[in-house]
Image (cartoon, rainbow, N blue to C red; front, side, top):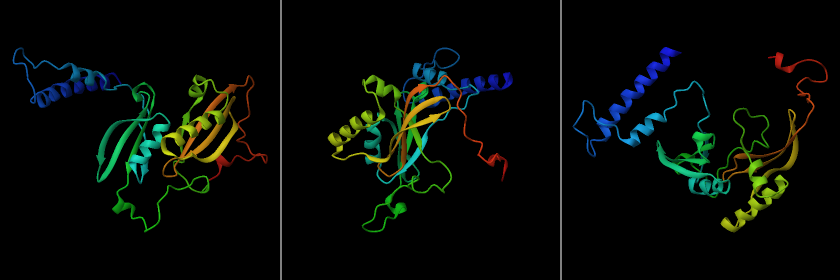
Length: 235
């Protein structure tokens, strides 16, 4: 591990030097000293390189038929565009809620070009409704913890928070939220949550979570079926 860290730091130093030579060609490269002086921006970028052994989730990618509408929807949930770019023929953008480097959430929106989407005339393509298709595997949804937002607004429930979000949607777009699952209570371990599901602009699922409390006693996971056989041990 020590050897790996030393190698990474060496590569980082070489990267910084290479960037200065390549980038500072646009501006001024100091001619005094043995090596060109590193600009403060490049030094900051180099120091931000993560050489730790952790593997944080970088982003969640969502395909959309209209990236402008998708950006507007996620704006209701306090996501802001930080970067716009091209992913092949598609328009794409990174949206962040808080600082992703400080543990915030980052989404990648990808607009499927119309010639690839190939929508039949008069029809609109939608995301798979995983509420109706319980048989499908793979990624199902992503969840947003709204506990802090509920408390900061002086509200007492997820329903009240969603009512405010719906009002915000009506004022901004003249449209109500599409609710996939109304708020309900769910035990997860010793924690009591309220949860609900929304459809985004294309029909993808977004879960909302409000943590209400932790119970003092341990709660059974419920994994063991009544018959005693463990389904996880079978193929």
